Image (cartoon, rainbow, N blue to C red; front, side, top):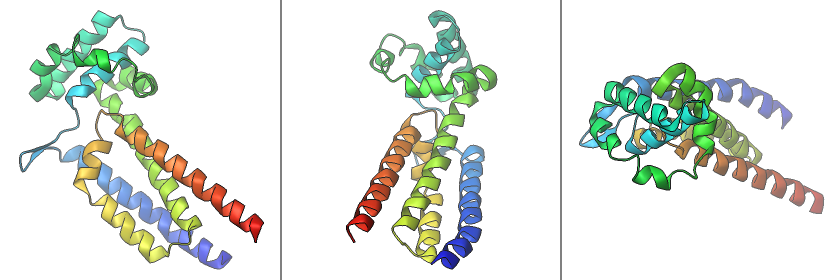
Length: 194
């Protein structure tokens, strides 16, 4: 069994990184409207997260909002007029969601609006790794893992929501951590009962 694990790790980790890199690069370079669906990198809710991230990085609420509007007009003109009307509307309902903007604050202060994509990319990579480890703990074959990785990596809808200025990738990471923990605990519990 140990031999299989070492051999599998030699090719599954590079395969995971290749699928992940290809998917991320494809998403970053090819986005926009596809068949009438919005596959942009920046969404209306992201206006709120961007503004909050700027506030966490030290700007006043008004300065953060103005900087966000300016960046949206440059990087996502489709939503620039929508974002001006959101400050006292839907952004108020997102005030309690502080984890994503808080984690993104250092990246936003350095990279601007594009900094909001750093946390989703890192969270997605960690999720992929945890899912791969979970599958290995369940004894899923290497071939099945490769097919599963290819299926996920080729899904434009999956990446539509996970590589954007939205917290969905953090939800995926939380689910992956929970799944990995559940599998690890159940495996150790069943091995103690044998």
